Length: 224
View 1: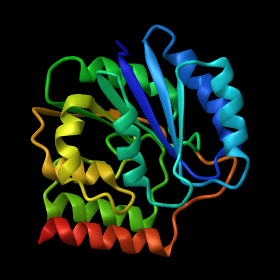
View 2: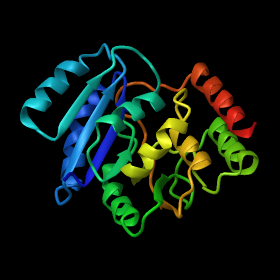
View 3: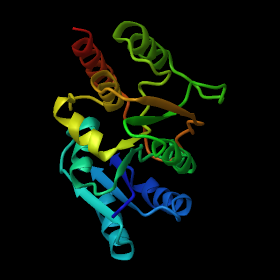
View 4: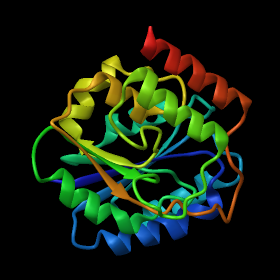
């Protein structure tokens, strides 16, 4: 049985895929794992890169949805193909460093019902925080009542069993699926592992006005 499924939603991240796979494989060499890329119809040659990778690496899965359907629904699509006992979700732009995955894996295995977050804000890790991110985190913690310092992180890990149980209750619209899980799930422990959120070197950010509006709508649905 696969121990860990790493689910990575992507859109036009072709330049980052190979270095990301190499880094994940290097850090998870002692963990039986699979890597699931869920693509929202990239037009930068991602499909060609993935097809070549799959010929050489049998633990890589590639799901091309053909259109931009949103990050949260991409994660759920990856979950549907996952076979690991645990699921790790991370971004495909190399801003989430795979070196933290073994520590997160160690923490999540300490007990059932746990969720582990790669957190940008629990220590002075020299992470830059945008004003909108700071405001979003404040709303999550003090208005919605989420007991985590980084409820908007895109880097987290939990048991696949729990993820599957929560999936039907998750709002698949938007980019902040961790927020949905924290708001709707009953976790025995929430563990935050400090990470350095790296600067993007290749490709472009997907954060735009639409993304911000989707977060407002998502947060409003959790408050009401």
